Length: 231
Image (cartoon, rainbow, N blue to C red):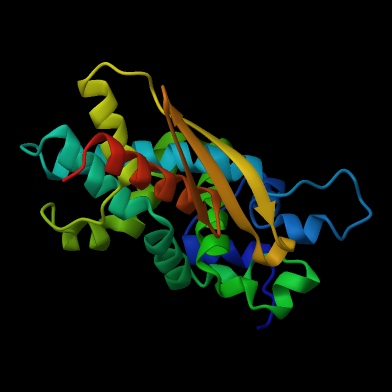
C-alpha cells in the first residue's frame, strides 16, 4: 500500500490542523519509532490514551441525546458497541486511515495497516490530536459526523456485550471493591503480541488473554462475571 503524506489527512477529515506536529505524532506507531535513531520523536500511545477518553465522552453525549429514555446500563453497553476495536477499525477504514500510519518494517510486512487493533488505536490517537489542537467542541463535531450513521443502526436490545461494564455495574450494586486490571505477560514480536491481564476483585483473581490489552481485559472480566454472577 502506498504511504500517504500525513497532511493529506486534513482533506479526508475536513479539518486543518493548526499544529501539524500533533497529527504526525498521532499517526506514528511504536514499531516505527523503535526503528528510528531520533530519540525526540514519540509514538502515538499517549494520544491513544487521551483519545479513548474523548471518544467515550462524545459518544456518551450523543447517546444521551438520541436515547433520552434508556437506562444507564443499556447506554453503557451501547457505547461499548460503538467504541470497541471492531467498530473503530471500521470507521478508520472509511477514512483510509491505514494509508497514513507510519509503521515499522515488521508491521508493514504483516499488513499492519489493516489490523483492527492498529487502526482502532490510531483512530483514538487522531481524535486526541484534534482535541489538543482545537478543543473538545471540534473533536465532538468530527466524532458526531463520523458516527451518526453507526448511531442510527445500533439496537439497544442487541448490542455487543461489554463484560467490563457489566462487571463494574455488578460490583457497584453490591458496593464491593472495584476491579483492578494489570498486564502480567507480553509474548511475541511487536507486530504480533499476545497480552495476558490479571484481574483482581477482593478474593477473586482471573486472567484473560488477547491480541491487545482491551481484549485481554474483557476476557478476564468475563471469567470474573462467571464467578460472581453465574447464570
